[in-house]
Figure 1 (tube, one colour):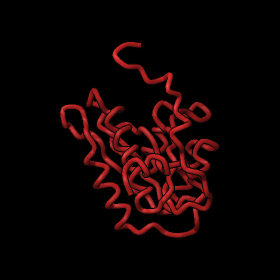
Figure 2 (cartoon, one colour):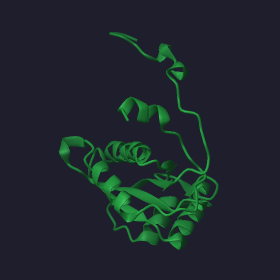
Figure 3 (cartoon, one colour):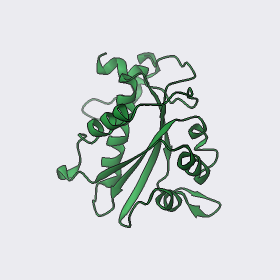
Figure 4 (cartoon, helix red, strand yellow):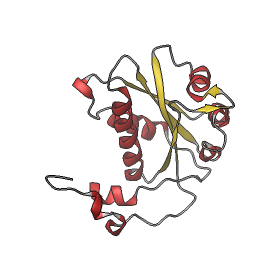
Length: 172
């Protein structure tokens, strides 16, 4: 599948089949995602792969509603980064995007749930997730990506969705 096709096919999937994603596939997705570019090639991103249902449910409760897609997700990846990097948010965003594109190539669906600077009932979502999975001080959490085999069908994107007025040549 060409990259253009992967981009068109990638959709946010919020319902997953009760089918395990193999540890080998999850590991491969993580390894390839960590090849993403980063500022000064600093590679500040670390990934936490979760398949333990109890932990995934606890993370879901850290941001109920927004993380509801984790209810049926057999796996998720917590995207973290060393906060001393001045480019950690950008670098983690690129890695997270790679994860989602790689999922398409494996026939998997995914959904991004934002954690950075989010709160539920006055409690930091990042702080709660750090506690659940043991992320050390000095690391921030950008997002949680639910992963699994899709239990819903969504049409692929089409180039006609692009607002060509958002593309500027040489000047605004």
